[in-house]
Amino acid sequence: METMDISILIGTFSAGILTCGLAALVALRFRGDGQGDPAEQTRRALLESVAQNVSEVHHVYQQFLALALEFSRQGNSWPAHRKQELRRTTDELVKVFRNLTEAEATLLLLGEKKLERALRIYGAKIVHLRRQIYAEKDSFTGDDIHGIDQVRQDIAELRETFYDALSSRFKLA
Image (cartoon, rainbow, N blue to C red; front, side, top):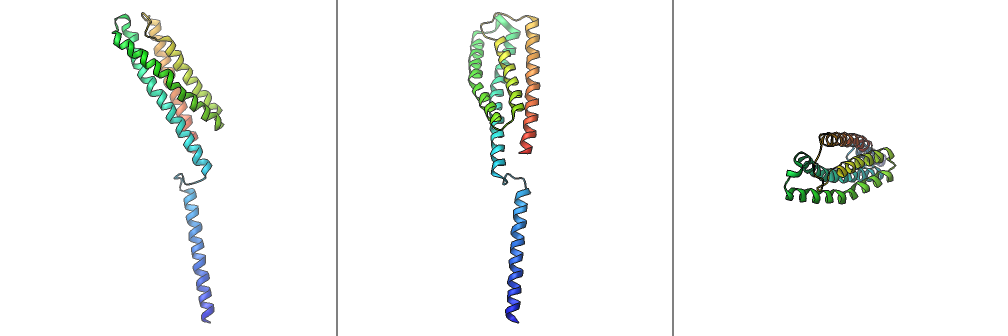
């Protein structure tokens, strides 16, 4: 009889361990802390790298924009050292666009064609603005300034739309 009690006890103990193990696996799977599927983790990491690349471009764009707006309002009376700073920031903006190209490639790799297209449009608007404002330009008309302000607003809207869509994709990953 004692042998039967021990075997029942061992069986019950084993079933308890198995149940706890399964519960732990289920909890880890649904906890949502990134401990899930490696493919999901990779996708999230790639989307994070896209966000980082875009934020680096946007940071330099913001520096360029601040100088561009100052220059557009002061024109010829703007000091030479500030024009040099605009030239340097413009060059930096051109260099950092490599990050935007990298982000676009990553999005295409992930099959996110709509996000990539939105990012390409965002970049094209920045290029459009950069071509309107350069340190060698003599002065700006009222229409120029209005056009610059409109492009600036368009860029802000495109960025917000892009990040909203990227955020929703990130939540799904």
